[in-house]
Length: 94
Image 1 (cartoon, rainbow, N blue to C red):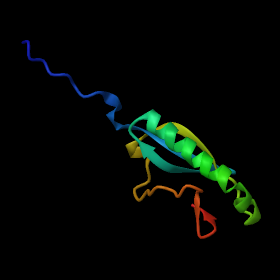
Image 2: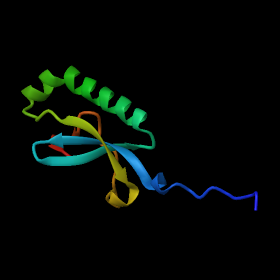
Image 3: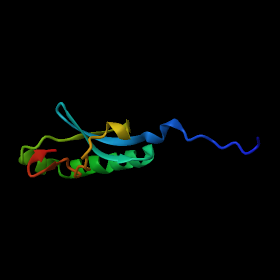
Image 4: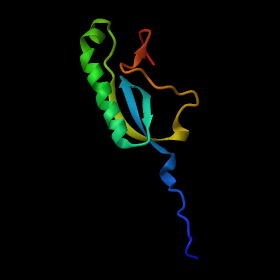
């Protein structure tokens, strides 16, 4: 009776997402197992946007806003891929 094993926690499926928002469009930019790592990535992405703000404005690209939110693995699209730091490729927000 002493060798009772702990059951896995129910939140193992919960991840932390860095979410890019442009206008009304939201995209998961990156996912992490820890909130601290997600906050660090969000800060890095925000710094990249600040560094390239002039370029983005001149090329008429909207500035993405980044936030952190919990997400379940099952909520991710099947073919999800991480977003680039500035949130767009080939002139389009992904």
